Amino acid sequence: MAVKLVVIYPRPKDIQAFETVYNRDHVPMAVEKLAGKTKIVATRVLGSPQGKPAFHRIAEIHFPSMEALEACAASEGGKQTIANAVSISSGGAPIFLVAEEEQFVFEDAHGTKGKTQSSNVSQTF
Image (tube, rainbow, N blue to C red; front, side, top):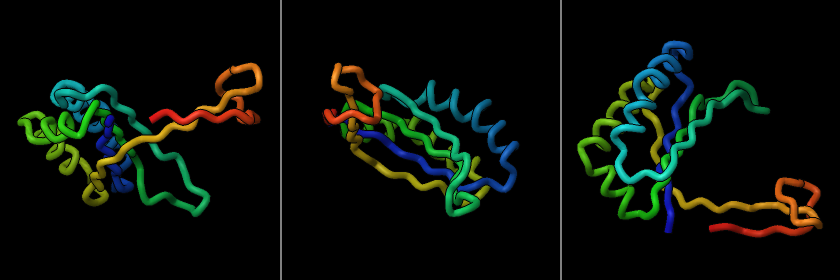
């Protein structure tokens, strides 16, 4: 079963400073040192209907199995990258979650994916 490590960063004290360190130092570190990953998805939170969002960044590091994620987290590179995530998070400690992803892919009547008015739904796990 494929899994992912989700890291949720609280809104930093200085957004520009955080973004500089995150993009210049942390992302390259994660790319280099997180062994066994299959994909990294980095999301920047732009806003919220409830007002100022409490979180600024969400990172998802995908692994082919729980064993691969656990091996990565126990490795020196994994420990260094997790420690760096904590040290750059100036708005408070980041939240770490382990998750399994479900995808809902929509197709129109002609089998074209991406149409929201579709009546055909398939799940990918």
